[in-house]
Amino acid sequence: MSDFFLQHQHDPGECETAFAAWRSFDSPLRGRSALSTCFAGGHRIWWRVEAPDEASALALLPEFVASRTEVTAVRFVEVP
Image 1 (cartoon, rainbow, N blue to C red):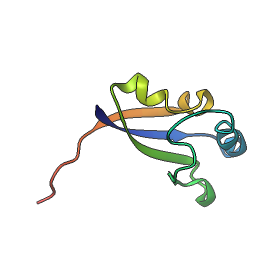
Image 2 (cartoon, one colour):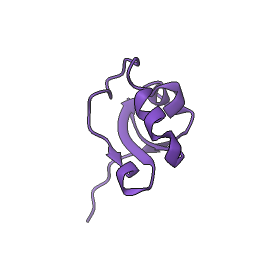
Image 3 (cartoon, rainbow, N blue to C red):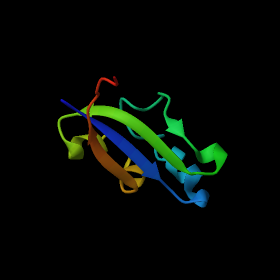
Image 4 (cartoon, rainbow, N blue to C red):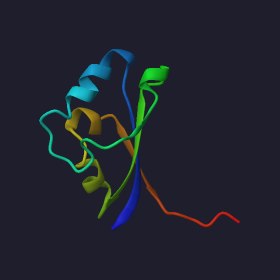
């Protein structure tokens, strides 16, 4: 498994759609907290996930959310 950082961004008028997309979507991310700037006006949401590859990481998100998400492979490092 690898670690990925998912950064989703939507337009201000799409907040309701972005959150509603989860209602009928089965995912281990559903019902968990995520970092978001929607209430501060930024309209971005971030997750750190473990998955075998980028496609599997995106598959954790509903299509509306996934299609507006950037995937970045990440690793934890020790900060001196």
